[in-house]
Length: 332
Image: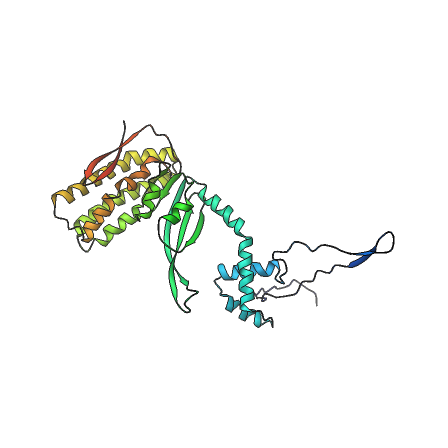
C-alpha cells in the first residue's frame, strides 16, 4: 500500500492541576581556615521566596488566590480538591498563607488605586455585599463595595468598606480633581461640593423615576420621558458621527441645552400650577430631577466627560424651583 495522506481528529481534553514538591538542592562545603584550626560551612543562598519559612511556593499561592477571589472557591473546597490528590493541609494553614500572600500584593493594589483615580472623569457607585460574621457563625452582615470606574480606560477599582457613609469615598477621593459622576445619593454631594470637582448626576437614574410614575400619571411621565429621550438621541448622534470633544460640546449646546431648559421650565410650572402630591410617584420623579438639576445639567460643560475646557461661556442659574436653582448655560 502507498500512503496518500492522513486524517487528523482533534478532541479537547483536560489534564487536572498537579500538586508537586519542588526541591532546591544546595551542596554544602566545609572550608578550613588558613591555619587549619577552624572551619566554616559554605552553602549557596536560597532564591527569594514569597513566604519565608513556609512550604508554600509562589505558584501554589497564586493558585490559592485566583481560586478564592476570581473563581470564588472557598478554602474548604480547595482543600477537598487537594485531598483527592492525597495532599492534606489544615484549613488554618492555608488561610494563613492566603492572608500573608495578600500582604505581598498590597503594592499592586496601591498602584491600581493610583492608576484608576488618575483620571479627569470617574463614575462612582456603591453596592451591598453579604459578609460572613466571624463572631456569629452561619450569619452575615451587610458590607459595601464602593466601585470607582474610569470610563476612558475601562479601569475599575473595588474598595470594600463596612458602611455607606460619606467618609469612605471622601478618604479615597481626597486628591481627585475632575468630573465625579454619581447617582443622587447624598453622601456624594459633600465630595461634589469641592471646588476642584464637577459633580454630574446620571440621567438614567432620573429616567428611572419617571418610568416608575407611568402607572401613576402616564401623561406627565411620558412627556418627561420624551424630553429625556431627546437628550439621549443627541448623544447617540454624537457617537454615530464620531465627534471629537469640541464638536460634541457644540452639539450639546446647540441641541441639548434648549431641551434641558424647556424641560426645566415645564416641570417647574407643573409643580407650581397643578396639584402634584409630593409623595406620589410623579411627585417624587419631579423632586428627584429638580433637586439635582445643576448636577444633571453639568455634562453640558464639556464635549466628553473628563476633558475640562475653558469654554468662554457663562453658566448661571435661572428658573427658581422653591429653594433650588435650575441650571442654565447660555452665551454671555
